[in-house]
Image (cartoon, rainbow, N blue to C red; front, side):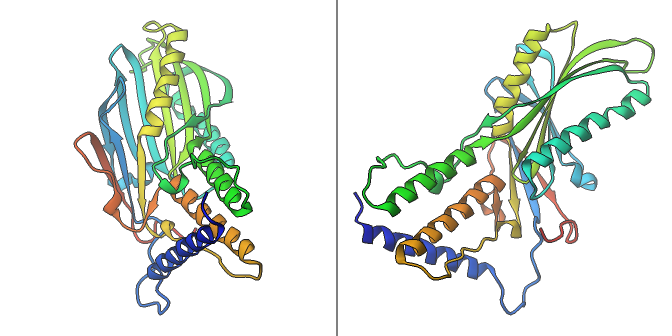
Length: 310
């Protein structure tokens, strides 16, 4: 068991490092221009995720807020059209963003109906569809040692780390199933379709997965199974690496209190900063952006005034 004094010294050292990092990023004399909330985002998509292979990747710099679109395919189910869209939303309340995003998606089908491409759109109920994702952050790794320490601060640290790790690994989502008839050329030839849309808020972006298939090519049960598999595999595998002032964090170590109370505030602040970093995937520069032969990377570069202070 770590001695309480050693634990407090370790926490103090962590706090000093965090304060120093924050101070180095700041410019108290105002000599440097303010860094936008997001300067650029590297959307990194594996070319292969399990059985799912990347078929195409599209990004238009003139439509940067529309983000990146990725098409995957499963070799055993080529009839399923699997499209993942990654586009920015910023710092927001996740539950409200999911509800709003699903409403916007439903409304977005109206032009296709009005244009004669879709008809008889029938929506099912929107359901929760949560995912678990891996978190590559050693500060949020659950402590493997027992939590039966006699030291209250030691127990607090372990409990908060475990809580932060669970929060970072959990991803709230929504799923909407619907059917419609599709006429590719508006030539009165109508093709019945199955479709499912999944929506998540991750790395300051919407991750929207849409899976569709001609109902003549797949039965409903198989379609549902493949679409759920695609969501569970692809959404956690694709990342949006953000560069900008969204990476800034400040640790509040002020206030009166006993050494234990101050140490508790410090560790809570440090873990909150690490949790935000994991959830938002924000960095001060692009050095940590994912690269590699197995990745397709599209870089969304924003203009200075694209992002206001958040």
